[in-house]
Image 1 (cartoon, rainbow over the protein chains, first blue to last red):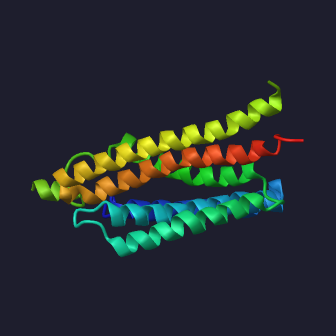
Image 2: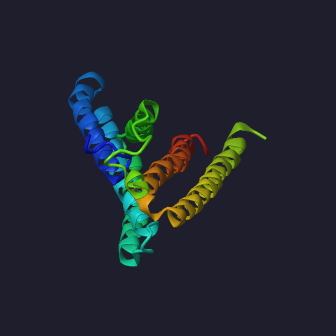
Length: 140
Length: 78
């Protein structure tokens, strides 16, 4: 199993899964709940994906053994905090979008992330040294 | 004290409480992650991923509080 460790590729796979879930939801949402509701949920989800991307960029550049990557950290912080949060505020102020629907879209990201992590923990995929495990390689 | 006054006091208090709680939690999480990476630099990838998941969940608390603030903001005033 080449991608079985809880490494940074886990996040890339999770982001892909969230994108697929949102893309599947969009046509069904438009059909069953209406265009604006589905678009609000979709926008909330996309905002959550972008937020997660920049959050991981901040953590990767700030918390690493080689020391802080200052340039990347500053760029990620400048994009995440003023620009992304302004975009979120703009989404909240769109009259057709209900804040509750935006929140549901944002929660889809967290739900997928939490469920994938929980699934790995319950299945015990990260326990014990295996070939793709960084810690296992260090022990060996 | 009427409903409007109570709401106008409770909303900012709730948001600030959520911000304080998530700030404290995030600070502790980052501190522990730094310590863990310092002890085992080879496990940095795993620690970073766990840190990102935790940070996303902690940050969501503040965002939820903020959105609830915006939802209930319309009920203040008038």
